[in-house]
Length: 260
Image 1 (cartoon, rainbow, N blue to C red):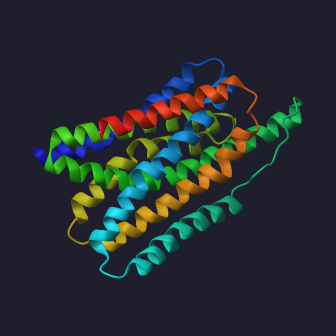
Image 2: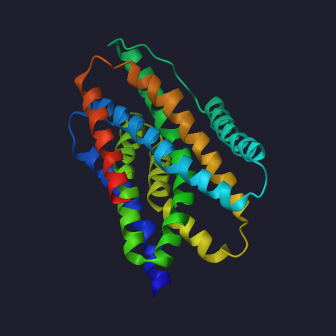
Image 3: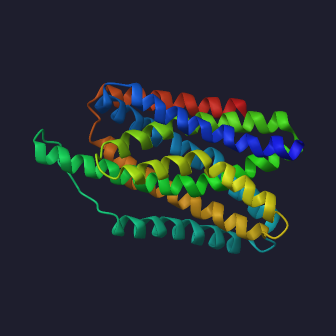
């Protein structure tokens, strides 16, 4: 019974993505929401890196790697860089359209392609991250359901704005409905998939392998934040929605820290 409850907790975290997707469906001002969501997601992802992933990587490296400090740093940075390069490779093979913010029909189409591109690669990186995060929630839930519930809620708090950002990005492209549905379903259920993988393989996955995967996920998230979201946000620094997004992003980070 305890195992069943622990398995449900990662699904709760994924439901927050679904809430973000649904919110986008009912908001009429799509452009304003997109600007707001992009700047909010930038802050949330940077917070995720520095207050969640980096401390976890450091803690795991101290526990699982019995080598010198220099070797640990090389190991971690190597996989972080690999995560960045991996997403860059995805980037090269996914149609990418740079755009100018001119209100012509052609440039609006180019802009929509570009925004969809951001949403697509963001979803790919978040799916890997969520699989690993689902494993963490499941482990905490095995020790204490109440602690696991708080962790799932904290994770959900940053999943909600990221869900809004992904949804606003991929909805900008009118084609590829099946791709959108698959991405959204994977985002909702990826944390549960991670928990199920650990449930069936928890005795066969080396700790070092888990550390490598988390480092790769960190690199992918870092790539999205610095090379996609930051660039997109800089285009809208004169819009008030950008600063609203920054403010809400900071509140989300503070809430995550408080719940933890």
